[in-house]
Length: 367
Image (tube, rainbow, N blue to C red; front, side, top):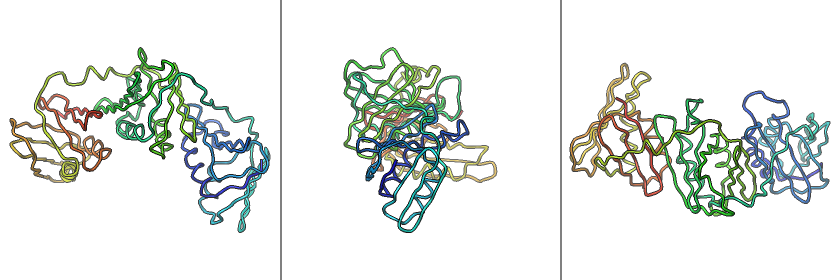
């Protein structure tokens, strides 16, 4: 394989693809990127055997087609540190050589045939979602996934695809985020009767590849895997095993009081009150009274805080406690000018935040 590449373009592609490389030692070959140069295009591949990506490289001229294995960490370091705009790449199963006007690097390579293959997207049953809509839905849910495997399969995002609607749901058992957007089904593609959960790593990898908000993303969910197709990439992932909790059962059925909040001042007040929390007491008390919200925190060693925020509220006095991080993390993914509604029942019942008609965020109180 021989090619002339634009350094910035190749660096950007390698950074995107390398997000699929395993963090732990699995197979040594998986620490590499595979390049396939053919038919006037070059595709980069990376995988950890659970999640993978095929990514088209822009700004690259193929002089001699072929396949090559690149040591990912070394290649990224060369592309970051080089100041040459154009680089020549020559690779075979024994070595990879990168040359520029002011530099030359030679690295050992491996047999490209040893790298696992990744599927392409050739489906006739799928959904289409606008990239900007999907990116926003991912940002509004993925932060609420569980870090570790729990009783349920909460280490990923639940996908629900009906004919014209896509829903993403994430939970760690203490809070739950639900985002909804418009989608278009083709060929009868649906998730009815299923509960497919896409791993957090795959969701984050997909989000990083959604750079053009106007492009269309194709989604195909199979019994044990999912494929996403953007204009430049195909992202593949196995689904999380296990049963996702029935999120509809935890959504409040009773109607309590509804409070309107503005995102910027509300977030500022929560962050201020949270200064005086500590590891033993990650708790902020939210006290709602007529036209006012008082936030209080008291750390065992940190001290105490009291912050008042004027709000529009004319209901009964209510007091409820939350881990402030769960509230701030939700506010971070909303527009700065967002208006929220907060539904409260009592100090022991889940609180439901809503932003518009397409986003809901449920938080369990601290009792």
